[in-house]
Image (tube, rainbow, N blue to C red; front, side):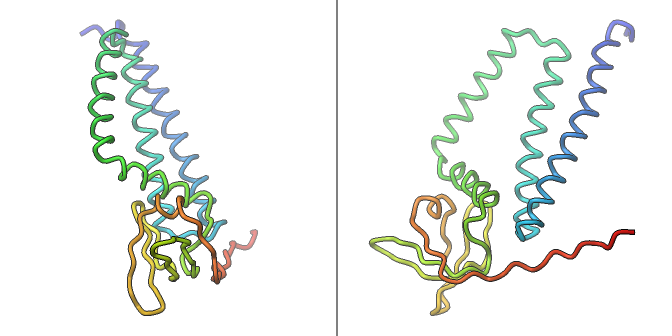
Amino acid sequence: MDIHKYFDQMVATLIAIIIFFIVRYLANSIIEKFGKKAGLGEGRTQLVKKYIDYFIYILAGLTFVSIWGIKTEQLFLFVTSVLTVIGVAFFAQWSILSNITAGIIVFFSSPFRIGNTIKIMDKDYPIEAKIIDIKSFYTLLKSAEGEEITLPNNLLLQKGIIIITEEEPLPIKLKPSE
C-alpha cells in the first residue's frame, strides 16, 4: 500500500477527528453550564448530552465518508435507502421520536421543574400532581393521594399546564477565585 497516495485523506481525517472532539467538548460544556445555571438535574443534563453526542457522531461519520471519496451516486443511494427504512420505523413508532424531542424541548425551555406542583388542564381527566422526575420519554408525577402518574413528555407540551407551586432550585456554589 502506498501511503503517499492516501496522505491527503489521512491528514483530513486527523483534522476532522480533532475538530469533532473540540465540538463535542464545547457542546457538552455548554449543555453542562446551562443545566447548572437552570438548576436542572444531572440525569436530564446527561441525557441531552448523549443525544447531542449521537448527532455529532453521525456528522463525523458522514464527514469521513466524504473525505475517503465514496462516489456521490453510491452515497446518495445508501443515504436514501437508510432514510427510507428509518422513516418507516419512525412512522411506526412516531410517539417515541416525539417524546424524545419533547424531552429535549422541556430540558432547554424549562417551563416547569422537578418539585413543582402542576395542574394539567384536560377536559376529561384533569391532573394535579407534583413533578417527581423528568425522563427522556415521560415525566413522573405524584398526586396528593399518593398515586404515581407517568405522563408522556409530548403530552406535557400539548396540554395547558398551570404551575401551582414552585420549589426553588438549589443555589449553585461557585469556587472562590484564586
